[in-house]
Image (cartoon, rainbow over the protein chains, first blue to last red):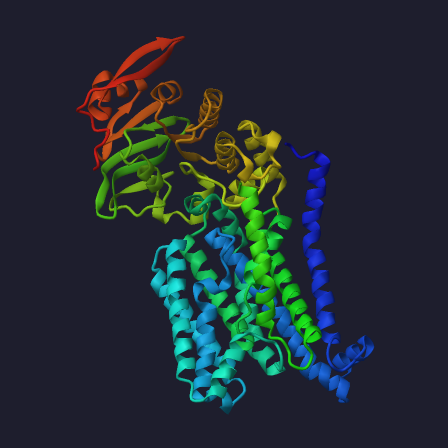
Length: 341
Length: 266
């Protein structure tokens, strides 16, 4: 079954179109995120609000509410998609997701601790700062546990250990919460959301997400080489230990910051690389930028959807991604099983 | 010219010594067949020569320089390692996989150059895989995959190729093809080390054989010397038929003589 030259050409053309099309989709969903909301504001007014600096109500809503929310949706989605693709490449397993190496769980724990100790009530940024501190500690512990060799197995095991322990401590904080409202607040926050985030959150998290994402984007070649296995990748000139260090650091910075401002948003890092992989010819390196764009599209879309589906008492973003993501993932698993049979 | 020299090399895996004081040299232009019973340490030796293992003692020099002093990328351009029973982990196309062999020659962010494409095309032709270059590597038969992976190693145009059982699982025709490719590579000036079990094929295609037994090279030299009845009895514990056809040595194992070291756990 050889592909015809024409089919092959079409295939390559298709692969070249993936990034431009995804970029277009990001632009569309970003605009939708600015347009959709309780107050009806048209596109001209939005552009005017962003670029003029006027201080009427519409401009304030756009600048203070919708713009930071859209920016966070874009950056957090990109982070989750990219980190998922990188981790799947390192572990050579399509079931890996950024949460696997313990960063999300420890970021959540750090944030929850600020609730528990009451720090979160003292100043607005205590919560994300606590989350980032948690992510750093978690990543350091994972690195320490995983040891000096570059084996993916020890990385997974260390990640599972840290995730379980962080989850246990989070439950403990809930268990010992001073009052039911504190517990409820923790649970709601853990569900993940972009609602009520300000530019303070953007300024705090964006630099870390940008640094982490840039680091992850440089891993394309070693991840490509890993297609041949660890020994062959090393003899192609790529050190596994350095690859793992960079990947864990990049994930800790980007996913840690993302979780710190938005809570846990599941399934994005798992599903997006999985969906886009065939479109880039299954190449792990090419999948990185594609997954970043795809993740942004997915999170922006989901965030618009929660505003449309449940105005007033908003559905949490993390709940929606899980509600849609889990059955979708089941569908992928069933399709994979059919292919294997 | 000596491309690679292992001098008094000792390697342990965990607590178990695998190689102890081993010496071996590979010259440009020759195919060296590395043979020996299962568990003798052939793969360990190959991995050590590829710079994948830390030595307990001794030294390995590539083109005169100690292995650990050579930069990763410089080494990757000079040396290609074809692991045993390796596989492709993603469903990339055959051509994409072969192109991975060019990674050490390409700059960061740079698309494949004309030279890269030429090398990949030549490697695919040589390994008889060009006709299915757009198929996903996960949809290949074992023999096809083996040839694709060899093409990947050839695509990097190495000075030194270390191939671990490249003919395992191939039909006789493709076994001959692959061995001819290795010999062609050597004739063009490269050094080739190939691990194999088929003694007849080894005798026919290798300029020199090195028999690994008891943690060192037990016999080294031309096929006639290394495959002598005494050596086969001592190292493999077998008796073999020795013959010749059209000027080629034929060695066919007949029976185990019992006292051999085929199951030597050390």
